[in-house]
Length: 206
Ligand SMILES: C[S@@+](CC[C@H](N)C(=O)[O-])C[C@H]1O[C@@H](n2cnc3c(N)ncnc32)[C@H](O)[C@@H]1O
Image (cartoon, rainbow, N blue to C red; front, side, top):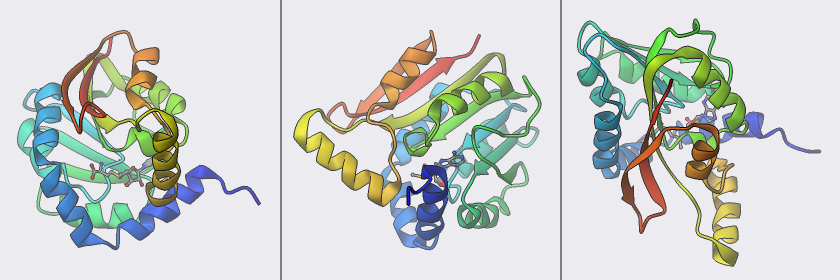
C-alpha cells in the first residue's frame, strides 16, 4: 500500500512532538538562524505573522517579541501532537494562537497576513507548490516571507541523506531554495550556514 506523504508526515511529527528535550536542543542550536530569519521578516509592531509548520513553537518567543503586544502570531501545524505542544508554549504569550491546519489550506482571509515565517518546515511539506499558492493568497501585497531551510548535497551521498531524512523527518524536497526561486521573483538569501547547504531567505510578496 502506498503511504500518503501528508498522513505519514502527521504521524512522524506526532511522534517527534513527544521528544520535548530533542526539540529544545534544536531550538537552542538554531537560535541564531531564527534570530536572522526574524530580522529578515522585519515585522512591524502590530503585524500579523503566521508561523507555518510551527512544530512545538520554538520560534514563538522571538516572533511574539517582534510583533509586540498589539500584534498577532498564528502558529500553524497539521500534526495534532505538535499543535498540543505548541498550544502549551503559546499559553505564556497572549499574542500567540495556534491553529491545526494544512499549510496549503489555512482557512485565513485573503491578504490578511503581513508575514509568513517558515523555519525548517517547507522541506517537510509534501505539496510545497500548493503551500506557495496559499502563501500568495493570504499574504498582503508588500508582505514578506522568511524561510530557514536547507538542501541535501549533490550525488550519491546526498541521495543517501535524502533517503534517511525522508524516513526520519519526512523530508520531501532536495532543494527548497531552488523551489522558492522558481516560484517567486524576489528571493534574497540573507545568511548561509552548514557549509552553504542551509540558508535563511526573505521573499518579498508583491
Ligand atoms: C522539522 S519541523 C519544524 C518545526 C518548527 N518550525 C521548528 O523550527 O522547530 C516541521 C513541522 O512542519 C509541520 N508540517 C509539515 N507539513 C505540513 C503541512 N502541510 N501543513 C502544516 N504543517 C506541516 C510538521 O508537522 C512539523 O511540525
